[in-house]
Image (cartoon, rainbow, N blue to C red; front, top):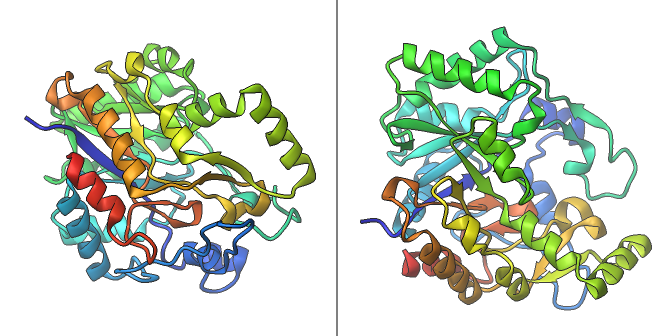
Length: 362
């Protein structure tokens, strides 16, 4: 019997692409913002420097193998690769996963999460406000023909022996489920086409960014929801009267980012009534610091440590313990979101601390 099925969000940003070269300059990757980050207040841990793997390039299979080995050792079941499909056959950052799929390596489970949102300059630019709202690429939903092309693109992954299944169906997560104007039709068609291709269907997971989203997503036909505890917890903390005043003041003056104690954050991260449900999948957040991308406009969880993260993991594992094994899914947000300060890969300050904390509880 498994304690939990931990699936880690995996960002494929770490290699140059023509679009990023055009928008930000030749050679831009996630590391560009990570490397130039500076501390914004006393005790602020920046820049964050990777340890074992260095400033890696995901075009290197050796890096992908090393990541999988670390994750497996820590008890992670597999990676959920963020997958970008903007409509009309437009994809970005697809190379690392395509190589994982075509090569058969690493021999480590995976699934896909559709990051169905438009990209704006503000997502990547910490250099002030100029042009920050500029649309870089728009997410579109052209209709049934496009849904078919999208399905055919991911079908080889669904049929790969490494693909993560829930009750004999490939797990597919949708980041902004209600942004798709006919999401019910989208899922019905994919389920139909899956069955036509010798699958039992698709196990759809919708991201719930607010507590009230859960029932709406389940009613729309999702098999389960991913509970975005980062959103839930920060909203609850910011909503406290004193916190609200301080938060708004810092935003108006633009003097410091929004700071939230990680210890306080984990106290708001578990909702036993929701997280114990078979169709709700909670998440665990080891750390967060958006300032490399957004400067003083970012949110920072302060004073995160492996010991506190271990406490959070233990709480969430205990909550899912009574679920049937197939539904004991916990999403780890994230494996390698370095420019959001949201990762468990080794760094120079904590080494393997977060991975060790995960391993001890799993």
